[in-house]
Each structure stands twice: as structure tokens, then as C-alpha cells.
Length: 255
Image (cartoon, rainbow, N blue to C red; front, top):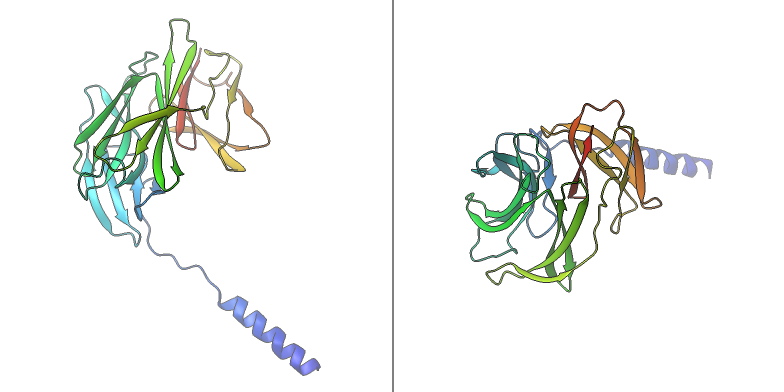
């Protein structure tokens, strides 16, 4: 009996020792994996207005150079898909642009739908900030956008719009829905600032804070058991900051 036990234990240990993780490839930049109908990686935060798409094995699929509006640069790229407009077999993706100079106006961010040739297919317009997420309803892809505006007193207001992306040849608004990332307060701030948030179908995530140049300033883990975080910004340099969670972005100002 002991011999059988030892043989069994040796077999189990040998099996465990043979398990391993094998690196496939090392890719440059900050990459994300498409969450819709495309098995590709893509640069979510290009630093030279060039979006790179990689196949699942790490081989380069395509480099897309995008010409932003004058005075803007790419801020974020959202999951490429063939289901947004789908007039052809070309991939399409949402791209948000940010002004290259710090701005607290309602033209500081704009957003386009482009294809893999860099051609603009739809212009979502200008805003203080844009946020994007995706949902599947009855097999149909919906695009969830949050448009943030700011008034002369730095008070923010929100319009959240849901688009149906059925591949019919157009992007159609179907309804309005709730928001995922609330307005920071007080805004502007000098000491403590509160960032409200609501996670969608996830227990944990993180809020990323970027400075006006787009560099990651800090990343803060968050959970669904809370609905806001408080941050001491007394040591932050004065300026505009972007906070982002699950593809939704917003801004606050430190004085």
C-alpha cells in the first residue's frame, strides 16, 4: 500500500513539475486584446499617432498612421471590430484625440470612428472628455459613449449615448443609459478630490490617472464594494489630469 501511495505521489509531483508557462513573443508599447469579434492585439495608447495591430501570435498585421485634427494627438484607441459599420472586410475602431496643449474647454477632446486605412467613417464631435465601452445584447454589439461637457465654472455635465452597431452601414443611436465614471469634486481641487465610479459586471479594476501630456501619473485599484475614491492632490503639479477606468475617461483640474 505504501509503495502504491509513493508511486501515486511521485506521479502527481512529476505532472505538476512539468507544467509551465511559455512566452510566445515580446511586443513593444501598451497593447490590449480586442474584446469583440477580432482576435488581434492593438496599441491602445499610441505615442506617434500610429496604431499597430498584431495577430494573436505576435506577428504584425498592420500599422495605421492617423492624421488627427490640427492641434490634436491620439489619446486612446478602443477595440477594433468588423461590426461597427461593416461595409467591407476592413477593421474599424474608435479613436479619441486630445489637444496637444492643456485645455479645459469643450473642444479639448474629440472622437472618430476610423477603419484600418486610417479613413474617418464617423465624427462623434467635440467634448471636454469622451468615454467608450461595449456591451452585447442578444448577439448585437452596442457602443456605449459618455460625453462630458464643462461650463465656465468648471461644473461638468454628462450625456451618455448608446449606439447600435449592427453592421448595417451606419452607426445609429438607440437610447440613453447611465454613466460609469462620475464627475470629480471639488473640481478644480487643491487638496482632496473625490472620484466617483461604478464598475460594470466586474468585482475589481483600477483607475488610471494621466497628466496633460498623456503619461500615466498613478494607478489606483478599485472594487465594486465602494463607489468612490478620495485622492490627496496637494503634491500634484497644477494642471489638467485625466482619470480613466474600463475605457471611460474624465478630467479634473489641480490648482
